[in-house]
Structures are given as structure tokens and as C-alpha cells.
Image (tube, rainbow, N blue to C red; front, side, top):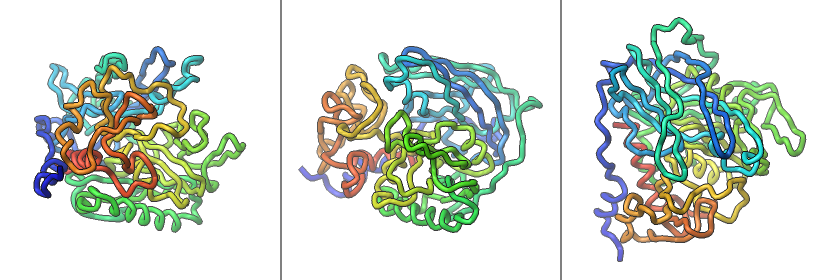
Length: 412
């Protein structure tokens, strides 16, 4: 049965009530705090440690929606007053969390770094980070410490790079601020990067719901020059001196390109406003990656560059899961079948009511087995979608709704 155009609009674009947020001006300045972390462990256990804290120029996020309403991510961090009032929260994923699901993690310990951001507090606060327990589907605390904004050891170094605005649609706190970062571009190739960033912007707005929500985005560019062109390709013994350290062969998968060391990226973007970071890598080789509230990253030049970019941005911006299950990956049983995944576009049917059950009468929406790298037990919402294949015409209605809700979150 086809749904009327009006009902389809309501189903797709009405956002659930967002959590009540405290007064931004009472508790925060307009600056930003970066918290650098180190994760250690293996497939069975993990730990997290504080590495350093940094004051940065501008908080680009919402000043009215400070409490994350989604419950997405393998990690969650919350900021409290000393007497326990919740001031800020956000979920995220990390490359370390992905590594823990690989075969290698069964046989060795490793350490990965990461960074998270929050508005700069006016008074002392308590930072608590939580890990999702896969077998339970719930969060448990893994790290806690206090932050005093007057601490002389909070780094206040001047940022090295300044961002340039490519598309200006309004104040940073009222828009989604997407930052494109150059990787593997030499100084002589920086004009190419700026042209590539403009091209990527065009790709994004070719797809719904981005096309209809174009005015809700600011697009920024950051142009750090690398000594050499291109990324590392370890399995071909190709190593390049670049700003971010992008590398193919992550987890020994040929096409999986990431920035394994997060700190060079965090330092590079320290002076730029952003809600989402996307790294454009100066290579023709097929590959990329996208990690929720971490970064998206992909090649600049390939016949599938448009499709790969928008797919990876779906991961990093909206927390969408991969809907394919036949391609090579390093992960082993990433989704326990007795737990409902947190991603909005896959389900194990444990709690289907929290997913797209309310959209089952929308044309093209249903239950299609196979997703999340698993052929059985995990279901996706459409036969084909941008999160399923590179040949899909666009995002399915369920993914469109999830993306639009994320845009609303940043633009309130």
C-alpha cells in the first residue's frame, strides 16, 4: 500500500522530542575543549586513559541541544556538574572498537588514540565515559575524571591551520558544519584539493535528504600541505610523509583506508569549526572508511568517488550501518543476534519497534535479510540503498529519516 505524500513527509522528517538541555550560557563559553584519550586492550577486555586536554577557539555545535538524544555509538561520554547535573553528552565510535572485533584482537593487545570534543566549561565539571557491553546492549562506565577550566596545564596552543568557508548558510551554532580536510596534497596541489572539496559538496547535495536540506549546511575547507602526494599502501610497501597519515590495508583489508593515528588529525583541525570531519585523500585507488562521530575518509579520484563519499558520510555523520554482507571485512560476528543493534538502519528483530516498524507501509520499505556483514539474522530496511551497494540510486526512506533527524539535532 502506498503512503500519501503528506504522511510520507511526516514519517520521514518529523524528529522525536529532543532531550531537555541546560542553559548553554550558564555553563559554557563559546570556545571548545578537546580531550585526547588512549584506548588499550584486546577482544575480551579494554581500558581507557586520559592523555591530554586542549582549549580550542570555537564550539560549532548546537547551543540548545546539548544532550544527545540518539543513544548511538559503542562509546558515550557525559559531562556533569560536581553535584551530578548532566550538562552535555554524545555518543561515538572508534577505530579501536572496530579492531576489537577482528581476529588479530584475539591474540594480542594494542593501543589506539582518539579525541572527543565538548563546549569549554565555565566551572569545574566531571567527565564520564561509558562503553557499550555487546552481550547486554547497555553502557557501563570505563573512565571518569574531573576537569577544572582554570587548570594551567590545559594546553592553549595557537592552531597551525585556519579553515576557509566554501558554503556559508549562517551561524555555526545553527547549522551542520562539515569540514573537508586535505590529506596527501602537496602545497603545489592545493588548488586541486579546493576543487575536489567543491566537487564533493556537489555530490552530497545530489542525494536526499541532503538535497532538500542544503541550506542547513556550512561547508569548510582545511588545507594542510603534505610533503608527499597520496596515502600509505603498506601491502605494496608504499609509505608517504603526509599530515594525517592516511593508510590503506587497515586490518589487512585492501580497500579499507583510515587514519590509524588520530592525534595528527585532531591537532590539524584544532582551529577549525566543525560538526563533522571528512578527509579527502589525494589518490585514485579505491577505498575509504567512515566511523560515527570520528571521521569519514575516502579517495579523491575514482569512478565511484561520489558513491563512496556519500556512503562513508552516512556512517560518520548519521551513524548508519553497512547493509552489505558479501564483501570482504575483518570483523567477526560484529552483531550479537540476541541484542538489537544501535544503528537505525539494521535490526535483529529483538526490538523492531525502535527501528522502522512505523514505516512498514512506506513504499520500498520492508525487512530484507542480510546486513551488518551477516547474511542471516540481521535485516535491512530496503532491497537496495546507498548503504548497501554503490549502484543504488540513493538512500532508502529509513536512512533518509535517520539523516534528517541528525541534521535537526545540529540545527535546533
